[in-house]
Length: 515
Image 1 (spheres, rainbow, N blue to C red):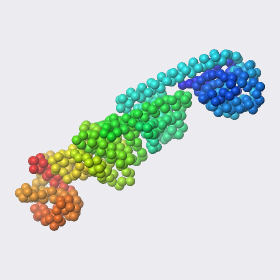
Image 2 (cartoon, helix red, strand yellow):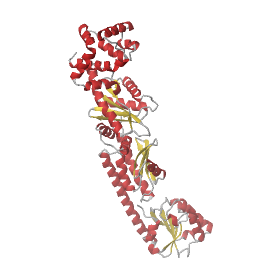
Image 3 (spheres, rainbow, N blue to C red):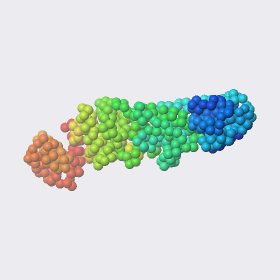
Image 4 (cartoon, helix red, strand yellow):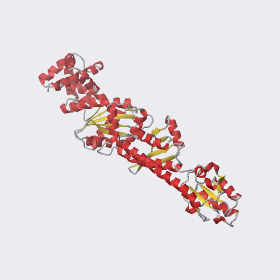
């Protein structure tokens, strides 16, 4: 923290008996350096923040307008103040200079006792350098702490806490799209936005040479403005690589994304603010009302699944988080908000991605929609696990009715059947489908498969015949045979759910017997 004009006058300049003539409201300006000069045209050599000492020698014999011009030029350079030693050129500081300094809000000080300028400069600049070195140590220490936090895999919430401890004021992270990502030192989102509006300092965060967002330090910091800017800029420089590291480049999931998905799959408790911060750190900023669709993928190589999801995220142009957890690649995608059925839209997109990328050997399950809460996301992600395992098994033993991409809601019936004890599955088949199953066994026909395809196509003869690659007349013959064997009309709507469960149980039972 650099010393202020007020502090220097009360300490290092006390022996010179300073008297403040103007600019009292600006005495808390930080002083970056103290030096003396008698040059009239000194202003171009000033960079701002200096406390200038002069005996007024360069103003000797000039008129009031010239003296005003001298101070006006210096004030425009945003110096901290001007101190004039009395007794050499002026017995009193000319009133025109006091008036001009007052107009500009510039601290103008009369030094009423002669003290060598070299002594004043040495004393003041020693303090300035000492504090600058101390500030550098603080900033370097903050950088080291942030890097340690990154090494532990912590997200923006923890990083902002470290930054806030140094700035002593609220710090807020806002994504480039305007979404509030994380904040520290505020009670709620409204307070966070208020801190942004009255920012004491802010710095852009760049990720892979692209603008990612802004780090803002709110009002109330004990640091002087220059030091606050330095702290915020250094912190933003560390956050950039952190966010770049957490993003998921093609073929390799980000560490922050993977850890977040692992915690969600493990159903760990995550506070709302932390979830929002971790989603943003993983490259997926949250906006109001955002929903997510989970995806689970089994592939010969995890990199194949990651590239597939990465392609889908890019095609959507929407946020997404990708990671590998326990040899399964998971993702949560933000579908098009205009989609009436986000699950179907996501499934269609994934089928397109598989086709476009000529990907084989992949089994993918699209889960149920989830809200932007840890509980909702965990529930949806966890539910995709059993669905994916079932889909993989069905594709392996060719007992399923789905392609490489399916949805959990399509598998709910099979999941229920799969959870039944073997005896209950056998009883369900025997009491519902036994005559038809016996006919299939004796005649090596496929009436059970025909019935399941018919029911899954909503009882549409046209769509069922097309799916089975047979004529409608042949289908009608099979359906008549099924009706005769079962003794009831399998097309009755009230029987659809029961028959589908029984047919699923038959498939599971047949696979278990190796049929």
